[in-house]
Amino acid sequence: MITITEPAIKKLNELRVEEGVDQNYFIRVSVVGGGCSGLSYKLDFDNEDKEGDQVFESNGEKIVCDMKSFLYLCGTELDFSDGLNGRGFNFINPNATRTCGCGESFAV
Image 1 (cartoon, rainbow, N blue to C red):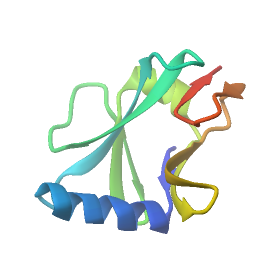
Image 2: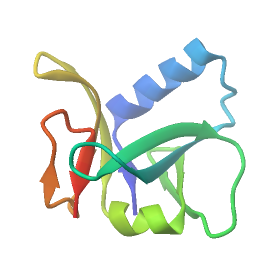
Image 3: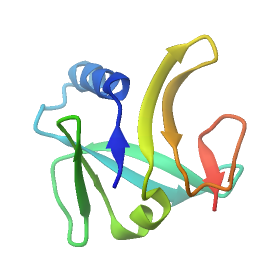
């Protein structure tokens, strides 16, 4: 399962408004190759389910990811921080054995 916190939902809703994205679009989370640790997280708005997608609901928000990404993301929590120690989305991933300093890439 992938979960999402209230602060992350609030920020995603702000981004929907800023980008003119319909409220019916869900969050697609994926893992792509790259970054200083080897794998990077990717967030998108999407409105199309694909074959093999894993679908979750957390705090009323639909979260979707492909099966390959789910193998890396199982148990992950998506959060948003607006504090002095950094601003942005944070992936709290129990599968990551190493993360880079910026928090945008990881390794398993």
